Length: 340
Image (tube, rainbow, N blue to C red):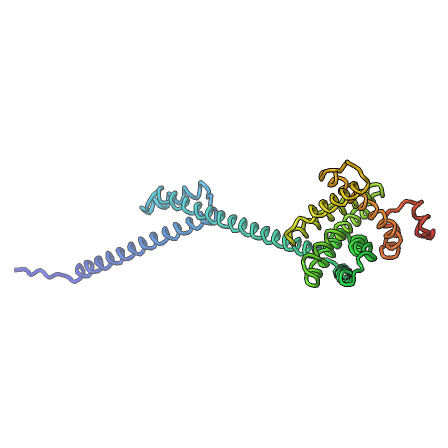
């Protein structure tokens, strides 16, 4: 009987084979992992390459597709999705930058326009401001006018000083223009309203203020006496009838009608004394009164032209502010320096 003894060599070879197979599996697994990690790195690298160049090249995309296909990845759809997404992000960034630049430019333009508007407003404010000297002179002329009219009305001196009341308004117009003349008249009216009452103030404005404005405006525009005399006479006539209307409104009695009735009674008495049978009616008397008022205004304004031609020689920058003719200046005895 023969006994079979198993040699340990085959056993060792079997163990060695198992160990080698395990080593091979481990090596193959590590190789697989290494290949997969290499593919993933290559995939990431190619993807980053596409991010650097948004448009990308056909060769890079193809290699990426091959790597994806070789590694068993998502395929062509995944690659195109990532590329389109990156391009959209780039477009959004460019749009945001352009919109930000547009908004910044619009804000800068608005700020510049606002600064320019503010500068224009400051210039307008400075241009609208009156000179200090003009304000002071206007106030002094208005105060002198108001006080002189109030004192003359209190002491019954209007007959002697009536031709001097329009002079301050004319001086203000000669030195600073029409605006100063209006301000002088307004301040004098307010001062007289406080001192003498609204009736005296309105009488001054109607009888002396308006004619002073008319003279100042005509002479400031270099009107001849043929034009300035009728215009100022018309202003005087309107002022007389306006003063009568205001007085009638305050007294609540028609002063013009009372005057016409008194004139009619006087004419009727004269005609009866002379033995005349003709007596004019009320309309004729009213027309005659109107004609006499116009003649009075013409003579009054002509006297003012002559007086102010002398008074305004030293009070105004222009030596011949009243624009008097050469013959009138020689007749008034003005020196040769003022005549030229």
